[in-house]
Length: 125
Image 1: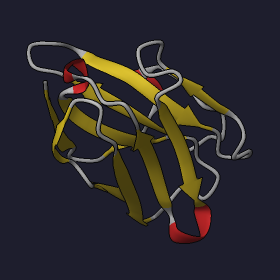
Image 2: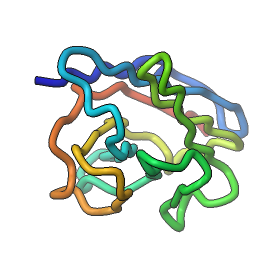
Image 3: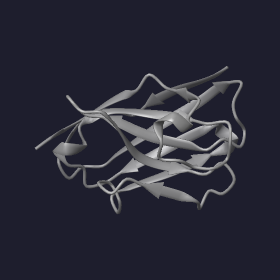
Image 4: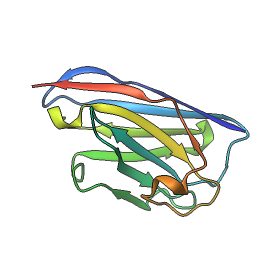
């Protein structure tokens, strides 16, 4: 079974940058697509970004983060990253990483097989 653990969350001010990491361990899906989702206070889980398991250049983003967030991965380290720039108060949420067994990226929650416990990001205005 694969385990995911996020890190890098914290309290920042609007306009600041933050980088989240997610490390996979255990029975990792070597070519599995990975993604970031988030859940803000009183909201449902929202797609943030995804990256293919077969091409590091094959990525997708939610409309609210396009142009500000960048997803990447280091397969040698089994680690997924999310670089977040120009943070806004509406980015405040718990951020979750997820992995699926297949290489195709997806924005659907149900497409992913394993999830991390999440890391809190709070942006003060």
